[in-house]
Length: 204
Image 1 (spheres, rainbow, N blue to C red):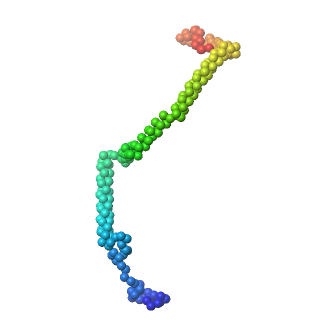
Image 2: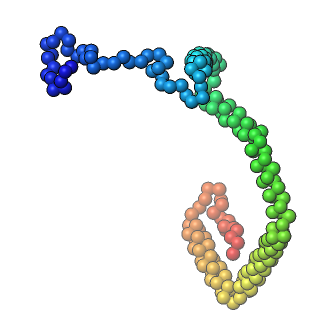
Image 3: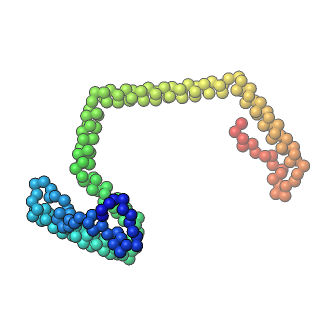
């Protein structure tokens, strides 16, 4: 191309070809860029070959794993095991793994040591004694309150007001029972039970 402002002829047999403007594009090792610092070209080639081999092995292992997982799923289905059973088993195994892990064991030991230190400390002992004394005092106070209430109820039963109330209830009861007797006098029962007066089983 001689000029950048030259029009492109779309009908030209050479359209889209810029032969004199194109340069050779490097291929192979040159396209990868310069070798990393400290590596020779041969070392780089060896590492790239090893990388390709490892990536190929990873792909193969993924395929094998997928096939094994399918087979495992088929066996579980035939045995009637549900995904929930698998989840329970996984959780149980995970919890077991946690319990035998070094971190869990060390944490349990540390918590045990702290518990021993706390329960042996003077502050803990004083707090425990204080709470014990408070419990005893509360129990004694409640017992005293119960005794006072019982005594007051006894005094109240012996008071003139309560006796007057009791007499009134008795009077009302006798009127109710008496009116019931009067209303049943005119009725005759076939068994003869109407001839007997009703028994008084009331607590008053």
